[in-house]
Length: 571
Image (cartoon, rainbow, N blue to C red; front, top):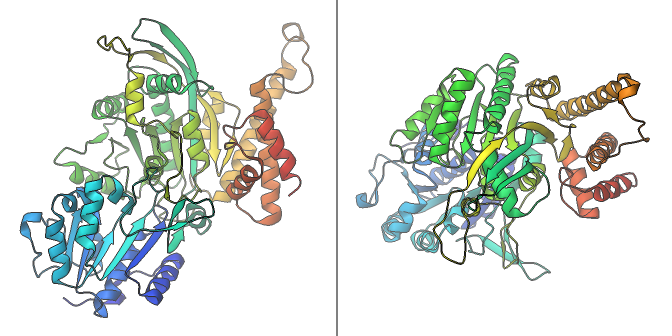
């Protein structure tokens, strides 16, 4: 099987730089970290072709997280002349001579590592470990990967998301001890979201965070109410969040209407095939959301459940079609390539940094200059922090003391139950009602907007943002929208009948009004510093957080915002 390097598409700058570094080192192990949508697959296949052509290796094995990604890898490899067997099973023992190698899953390797070790020893092999953090999912998977691929001539590790938050060392990853005594993973090539955004490789992502009033009944029969996004205990946040995501409430229909309106704007404004994705917590919710979409939009949604036999075929059909909406649980959270996805609804309870980055990675792949992505999410403090830290680059740290940094499905499931020491049978948590309203817009680490009721002209101003914009234009336009919104509010106060408006003290009175004004002032100062220095907005916000401490501006207190305003004026 003859390979021609001329069959490959031109490499991007980061891919060329990483390939030169790889070929220069000629070491057994190499780890490349690149943001979703940057082209890790193309990079890895080019490395494979180089090694096959010069005789360094005779075979290629790709290890992927899911069955669907096996097909995706084999298809991509076939386009450049590398034939990989996506249907290889452990019982086959060896691949047919028609192939350069095989694509397998981490689960396959974990079940029978000796089969893959024998294959690896038979021919000089390059092993590509896609989303290598999955090798730490369980001890059996990690041990299996190590046992199977220790004899490989070369191992190329890829990841596009923050590393794991546990202490399981990942096979073949190099860890280095820092001054604090903790071991951190070391990458040989890093291409982050901020770099890719600056070079137009990925789309700018605009987050629209929706709050609202939620009401639920506890297992004891008590009715509780809370406003989504307000400071409260983790249990109450989890219950309010769960209530908002309930398909029977009003929060989800209102958010889906807004998301579909945004999708229609993108389609009318230059992205004619733009698609939307709702990421659900479980299969029952996914089916309910699909029914809501049909009710709201008049068009059926495609539902993809990971245990359905035809899931991969439905994803491929949706990718090639012009259907508007896809609803899935976890099938498309990582690696699945549907470039036309441009609007997302984050309707899941999973919120670890790893899962969030994987999910948002489905929307960032750029096809042409100017395309933007919009993700709708609940106004939950932890999610707001993750949205504000899109550009953060994280290493895997071993031995770091940590508190729980998100709400996984287990925590939210417990939030539905009343766990009593008496051992009484658990009774169902009951969501009663939830309404939605736009709380804030997050872009490039900054928070914009003053809140808007669903269905109002103020909300429509943000839903109607042009779909074809550069990152710089998005920031300018959001600043202008926020200024217009505040000016309109001032005009309404000034023209209201004097008899109905009591005398107002100068300046904002409530904590909410003060935070809005301070966020606006901080964004303006950061924007001015950006124009003076050329630094991205996100990097300036990150530097202010480093100097002053505290969470992203979307969550920051009045005192923290005032400190950052004072600090940015001295930069």
